[in-house]
Figure 1 (cartoon, rainbow, N blue to C red):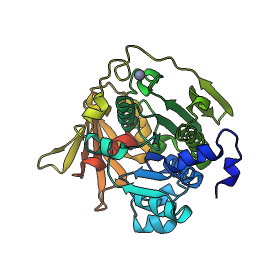
Figure 2: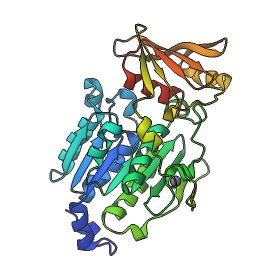
Figure 3: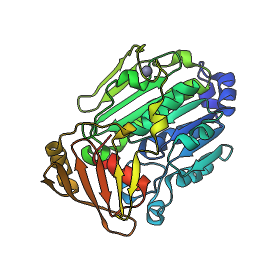
Length: 342
Ligand SMILES: [Zn+2]
């Protein structure tokens, strides 16, 4: 099955054997994750752990290659739909589906024995959790992100810069575009995910010497590719000082407000931030009806909860938000990451 790729002199029979004995943890099974998972499975990576708490929706299908209309109709969890597809593609792969949020409670267990952690995520907060986990345990982490016509990837290795060296000022909520506000196109995600999958295969095949060690970026508006070497920051709170605040804070960020049917969500990492509410109001116009009321932006999203009721959303200038008609903390966090960003 793998003869053609074994002809590559950097891989060969020895590299293929290493892939067969390898375990990859892929967090996020959507657009990025789907392409990454498919390449790793087809390349013969022996064991895959797939993590995603979300379910397949019709709006996913234009870019999430592992899923079908049937998955969307039935609302199948993405991790389970992805695992089923992997078994169809390559029955020899041991695949484990995990329909959960990655957090302090399960991260170490899921990453156990993984030779690489690959990023199929859609928000910076969980990426910083992965970054903390990878640096803490010395596991290579392949960062990947795509939005609108831009893609980025970087191999976070134990001897190099980490994601917090690259983004020292953790992105302020509302400052970053998300796929829900800026849009996204399948081939742009696919290109980025394919690059990330190649980087992961190099790590797993024992050829980390061949990695692109820079911050790789693709700007498909002007068709420009770049790889920028990022130096390690000795004062970096994560890889320098070794404080893993995102890994520790995860789970504390969303809290149910008693008797209100609402969940309060803090900005990524649980830290206060300053956000521009007028700018956020402008971006939310396409997604619901909002107005400024005193020091807060308040309104109703066009997106509905599991009972078909529209979510209410109140955002304060310090980045705190209250998601109304919601008691599910994971769902509230997801609303925050999609519409406020983080
Ligand atoms: Zn760092």
